[in-house]
Image 1 (spheres, rainbow, N blue to C red):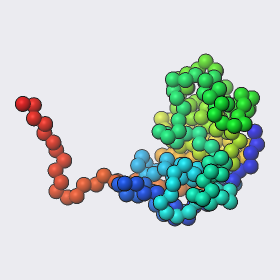
Image 2: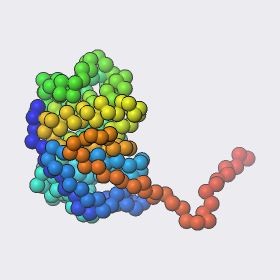
Image 3: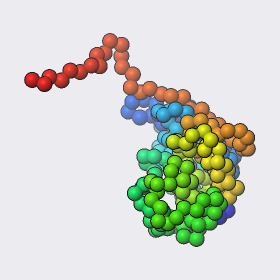
Image 4: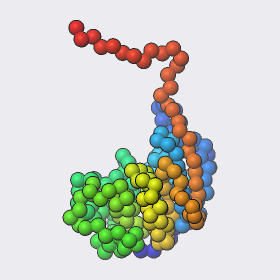
Length: 231
């Protein structure tokens, strides 16, 4: 299961949409085998940042380098190097499928992934989902760790997993972060998104706080109430 982790560097990385900046001016240095926790509220651009670091969203400004490959020129190489476990809504497991079905799907769609490799990833994360279980019945932590194991089976240089603490009470968050630490023990750099950074101690943690951005501000004096006539 061991893969060689890659370093991830960003300088002034920015993405802009039609309504303005999604995130901007991001600088970060994550060593090979390290853990990035990009944290902040909804609307802060966490998911977009992770997808940009994975070569799956084009930068509007700045630069990103992953394992010596600079985006966007080396986008294809970076995408082959970075596995995305979860970055909803773009990447997520279908809740109505059974575990055995998502395993079979991953073996078909990801070169080099085998059923044995997935089971080894399950063991690495200390999970044992039954093949007949529906993904949606696994609970927040179970779904997250299943998605992470499937991505780990790809033997990537870096692994993206967003919304790490979504739906989890505080006492359930520690074991999930510990599982992500176990992912690092098998080589990959972990690029995580979350509302709050992991609890200490977290060796090798690079924490990045992203601010909330409002791209829907109205100019002063704009009326927002609409009354529809019924007659």
